[in-house]
Image (cartoon, rainbow, N blue to C red; front, side, top):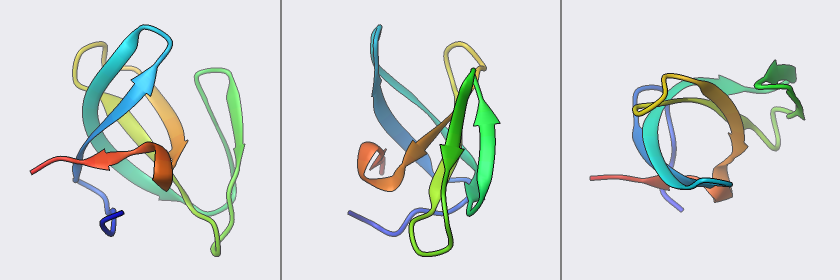
Length: 69
């Protein structure tokens, strides 16, 4: 997996299929998005992403995201 950072364009899977968007923040603590509570840490960060299609935000583990370009 490539190193991920804020502003990166990424792709991930959702219940509705694959979608693309942008990483808006690196999460290293407890955070909530879309009704989901993410329990990240500095050792195991997660990433807040914004969907290019819907504009909604979600939080995903790095291994769930594929960096584009």
